[in-house]
Image (tube, rainbow, N blue to C red):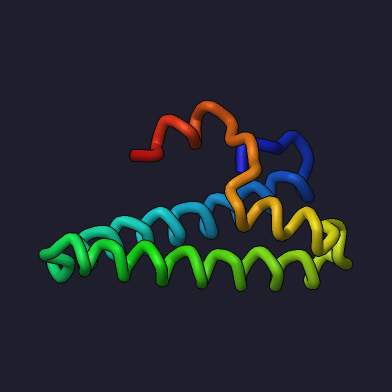
Length: 94
């Protein structure tokens, strides 16, 4: 969304900003809704399990969408947490 300089990339940047803003809004609402509902450690554990399961599915869906750039072995490594996050994302982990 920060790319621009010609008509095509300007249009792409606008579209990307719209997607970004929409996703940030979804995340904020989801977090607020979860905080209102999850009251116990068991609630939070279940929420974590659900997010992990959905995330695994989504990574596999995107892998298929983009022509399987990741091997099944790499997907398993990712499932096991064998990844390096950029500092800006790692700092968000609690």
